[in-house]
Length: 159
Image (cartoon, rainbow, N blue to C red; front, side):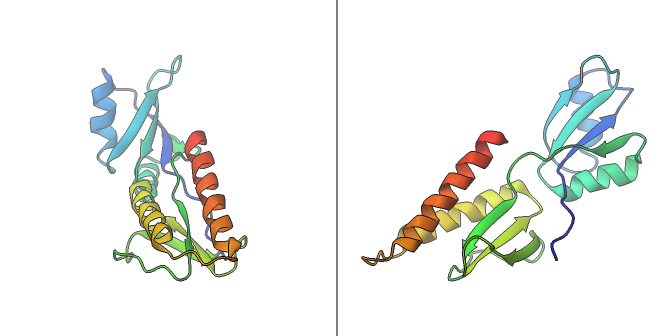
């Protein structure tokens, strides 16, 4: 059973902020900040995006739900992989969950904690698929490759 969705973006009330750099300094106590926006017309409200969902969870837990709450996530932490692929890195603390793809038999979907780790895994997948030998008459592999490249492109446009 898949875990509840996680987010890497939070809204936080930081009323003592004098300049934008103060936001980053304050919020980086919880992890590396990917970006932030100061919400106009609401004194002290900032939207902060972390690379890693664990950092956003730490900010929410530490600051409490009156000062910090979840926002819609940004970036893509999900990667579809063929079951035949061997990854070139250790995933011990990088993968939040792994489950079978419903769309493509023999493929898996991984949810990473950090969007940067997911991006590296996607690059490995791209290299793996490019190195695969194409066998005439097997359109399914090409179809799956195009479908996942299209899905990644669409998700990156939204993010």
